[in-house]
Length: 623
Image (cartoon, rainbow, N blue to C red; front, side, top):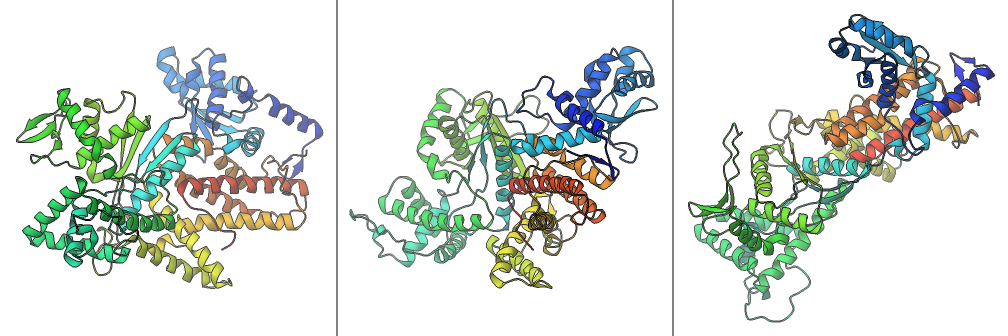
């Protein structure tokens, strides 16, 4: 194999030295062949050895990305930290360490800068070795956990019989990405939609339906036969019935009382009402699945509040028997305040004074059932951040009453609001809450216009491609923001092919696909290629972005932060495009150099597509 540096062929002896380095480099000293350390860990290990050789603690060798990239690529501030302990000037410690790094094959530069910083540049061979290891490893070397966790993610949370609106977008998009990231990292993940399917809204629908169609067999209490398989309403009719009934209940006390009585009958097993409820659920869930499918969002469980209704009495009896719950003004509550609280944390109400259950009751019963049936190590709730206090109460109550194991983690990921350009929650032009399917249709339409503008593409392909790109615009526009932050939904900016947008990232990957395709069409093979030493700065910058992949994925998983993958993907796209504009890849006459570049592009594409996949979208073949 030939290697190139600055356009000159490296001598055969140098090639042997590089090959020996690849075989003997530090990261293979004690590790199994199948494992790859994160790049920064490898660098830290090398600098740590130098500290150790100089007579200092190895832990002082921690390496970080430089905050002055104009001066160096990486830095180590360990000498500053060790100065007090070893009673030496930090510059003296740094100089001693730098002497031992002179012989390192990991770094091509190790300079001391007063008062004691170590400025580091990594060697070409080190980067080349690492990238080729990534290319040949499963998941680019992301190490599988020694003990995979079982994680449940509670996201979605729509009410049946009501259409999804823009308020459901963030929970679905963020939850789906967190699920995919955790699975990529090797954990067992279960996503649960947690439907609202058992409350007063069911009684309201039944009441309005009875008013409109009183002769339906479901309302005949003497009927003992089989109920019809077909629902007596369509999804469109159902979506009109609920708001009508809800509006009436706010103005007519008798109507609301009847709805409450019908809710009670449903929950206590009246046959006709249970049959109607199943129709409501089937019609609504079918529509929900279609809408979530348009977002590339999938749930493993379609459980709802109704699934835990029958275990609530058992849970209540347990809380009473064990002395956790007590009466307060007629209601049953569990005190969850703690001595260290700096703000008021109200008791967690389990039953209202009339004995009715609440959301708290249902969520606690759901935790109890999840622990019993799935025994998760972690449960993550992806919900509006304004419910922070509510989940603080529920989590404390679950722990105090021992509904969860001591080691089970309960996490609340509160997300911010999706706002319009006016800074207020996103609305339609008429001022109402926009249906999610209408939002998706709008962004699809905008994307289709841009696809057809100045491009020749068949109508069917253009429509399919526009949906793929529109999904990236929608999801990336959301996920690129830190989940807890509010953000402005700007359809013009999100659908742009320039800047920090989903379409820009897709266009980058499509550009790489085009180059690889042309290389293959010209007789080049994409098999058995390997990255080479870099020949220019932009090429090295691209390599430096690629080696960070493992660290970024791990950080995004540990911090439940999809926006970190978005930031990495954007930086990777920028690094590639700089390299692309500065390098004539396919017209390069030196076939070995060209092959090395093609290997680099292939790895870049694969890494970028893996990032896109965990974010929940993909790139088309052409745009």
